[in-house]
Image (cartoon, rainbow, N blue to C red):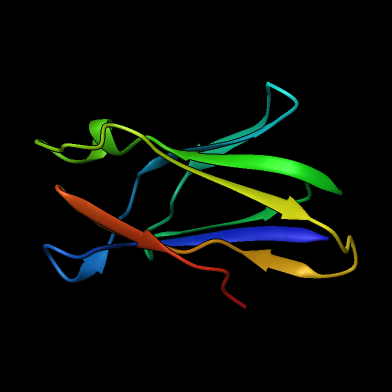
Length: 99
């Protein structure tokens, strides 16, 4: 099982490089890092269960209504790859189950 994310800045139309992201499970931080120059972070292996990906949008955007974006998801099949993309702007965001 692996997990990745890709964050795009909808204001600039470019990848959100250097955005801090952490992965939580059972109330604990199990991994953390920053998106690369292409806005990607990959290689996490969280295992089955309910997890939270927390995006530190307040540190990335100068002004934002959402200082933190939290995406909670369930890993049901540990043999699959899970991808959680985020499209980000100061006053809106969207996400979906990617591939």
